[in-house]
Image (cartoon, rainbow, N blue to C red):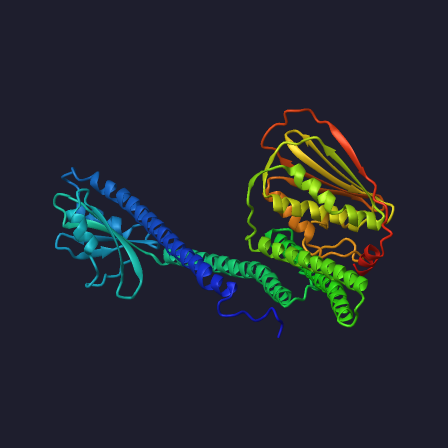
Length: 501
């Protein structure tokens, strides 16, 4: 059985069949009944009008001789009835004053039990004419029109015309069959076109459900085929895009797990190795060296754990900021001083272009220092021996601008838009968890600032941070350049520490 042929009892198709189609069918049937009733009423009214007009012509000719006292009205009426020219279509009758039919144009005596209600109504009517439709004892439907005549000396009280409704009923039946056929055709067209339309929606929805269940299980290899450019096609595009993003996120998550595992294993291995070594030696110099390595690697572990905790807080919207008026220049200067020794040990030149003063900002100094540490750390991390890292701070358009640039390996055009994405690492050979920049960007965003990364592979990277000022600077900018020449240390302890990292 095809995976598209089986519809559950709550499927859209059945809902449509039982609800929408049934309503449409009922409405069409009601319209059909009303239309047939209108047609029947029209035909019957036309028949009554036709026979009544014929009757008016006969009664007018009879009544013209009503004032002639010498005329034999009985003879004239008999002659009129017996010689009626249209007797093959309409039967003309003469009714005596006793209410009995005396003669007919067909020559046949009428049934004594014939319905003469039209005669009774004509006698009561103001114009003396009445019509009635009824069934004969033979089952034939007829229309009768009776007109009362008042002639002196005449034994006849009224003239009556009777004609069969067979042809009219036949026409009504034909119209009924045609209308019913049209209604059935409309219902069938609606049924099949609607079923086709509904299935054109249901089939892709079923397919979407099957593939999304695969996505839920972690299989992002399959994609939904787009068969139309309508809203359903847009849904397919959206789901395929979601799958692509989930696949990329899953890939980055796996890379993150692998990377963080490596990042954790390296310091743990160093700590474990030196701990075991320190338990077996008595050399004071080696002991101091080992403790330095253990302290350094412990600090490294602590930093990674703190990044993971911050990322978790951001994901759960639990990251809190302690806002206060702070001197942003003090936090930036302290960050640069922190990395002086490390840059010197790696043979990297660290240039700090420090202004005399900058306006204060409203922010969390610990979180902003965390951002500066992350950015400067990345600049050094992705630079090699002989490269230069430059840090500059200045005010522009009532904003504090902090620029950190390097002449390191840079970032490719393909990776540049993803650098602030969680778990993403542009270069897997460099240490790091891949979430530090994402955390930094979130912190800056919560300070109503911006963090922009510009880079060119093989040339270097520049990170520009902007933060709004809370007061204007009163003195003009006087930049003083502090060129911190960091020459590689010959210290064996520093070298060993770097090797362990």
